[in-house]
Image 1 (cartoon, rainbow, N blue to C red):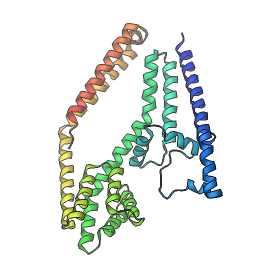
Image 2 (cartoon, one colour):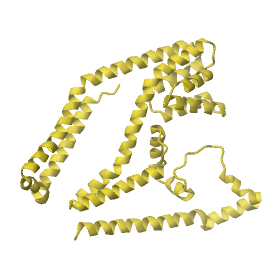
Image 3 (cartoon, rainbow, N blue to C red):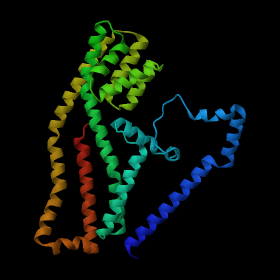
Image 4 (tube, one colour):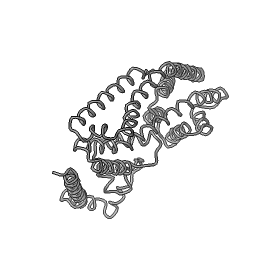
Length: 324
């Protein structure tokens, strides 16, 4: 059977199932007997002001501008993780937009695999790889933002220590660092200061800050401040010590990165060399390299080579990636 026809049937079936599921979820939320019974009871208790229950004082991040789609996405088990990744990356995008990009790239991968006449497993692999590209790009943006935050943290701690030596309280020093430092540290510290102004305790605000920014250096700062607020001590000297520790860790991490550069370059060379050599051989004699795609045995050899390359890359990454 033609691979393109099979893919068309699978996509059509998936679209119909999603449409049926969406209609059922919408009916279940608004027109089911249980929902109508609850609405009648609320109307009987508080009259026409039942709509006021939709307003909450707790700010929640929306997964979509559409209320129905937002409620549907909140039922997905992986939606909170994607929303947390978007928050940590500082992206203005919502979960619905990210999933739309993933779906669009996945369909593009399906069409590209079908046009290249790949086998069904290859088409599915290309579609999954293309669909994962937006998440991979988001992960790289989150890592870059986290690296920038860690670079700004020692300077911010020194600034807070100087402010407290001048007689300012810790919340005022936090606001000073938020105003003087740029993004992303300034934005995150400003959010923590705003939470304190809105009535959140300092401990909860710092814990929320540590959850938004998954940085080990920031966790040192949060734990030290929370312990100091319970047991007492000189917070200015504590901030200075943490700042020196963070700088020493960054210096050591830079040295480790320099020493492991040879292994990373070897990984890049070993990954790109087969593709470069294969491209040159294809330009010299296309018929010889075409056997790897047209012949079943050639495809098996190609898949085995890709699998061994992937295993080698993961092994080298495990060796040269030193956690500190």
